[in-house]
Length: 118
Image (cartoon, rainbow, N blue to C red; front, side, top):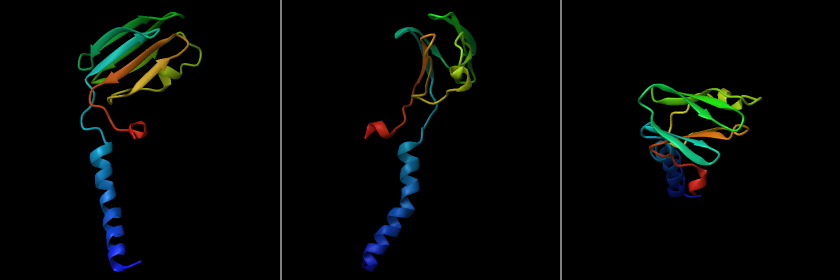
């Protein structure tokens, strides 16, 4: 390995964090949320307006809270409550679902790169 090879390797290693930050970090937070019931779009709402939405699913009603540019499940009739434990979603591309009740939420806006893009 020559000095030139070593210099190129050091430069590449030093610039990697900057390239990562530029290409793989979200530039802005999302601005809309899409709510689905059984694969059908029920509502598309603005994340900048605080509210609670009640959505009917196959097991009963799920409650979805929108507050301060974020969204989350607050109540659902499912047994595991995994949808509630996931917490707040705020970035473009974030997704959560209550599978037993067939309700899902998708945050839209500025999309991020992930491994699926390659």
